[in-house]
Image (cartoon, rainbow, N blue to C red; front, top):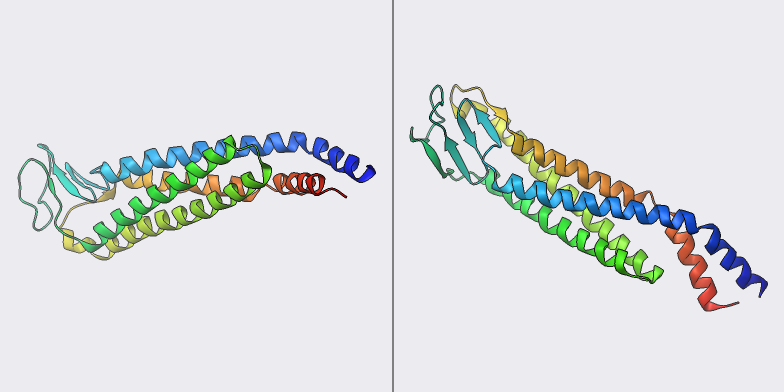
Length: 207
């Protein structure tokens, strides 16, 4: 009885820490939802590259009526938005961003299930799985952004004599990476749930 009482006491002592951990998971969930929004915008936007009225996205480019200077080679001087010329690293970046979206969706779904689950043991397993998917999503996101930046820098001269800068969609991609890192950090820094899980299992197994 003394052993059981001590385990219940440990569980009670860690009650506040457990509530704090739950708040961390809620914040991690919000980070995951923010990533879904940001990556969706990144995939749909045309502003990965900006240059005086010309915008280049992963799938299409747009030429506005007030563009200045010559357009990149192979781009006709026609106002409007059109499918982009085929480039391997555009497709690779898009695929990695899409992979980021799917991995983050899985991680976020696991967090929702974990928060709705009462069994501590199942919560721990779901949280650990979510952490793995967040890590994979972060790697995919960083790989896509770095690939895009490096490849464009290497072929910058091939785009003609224009002044290019990375657009807001590219910046939102980095914003998604920051949120992914935040979610992963929140999941990695939590240790109280392991202690509570051990206490609960000791109570269930008995002396």
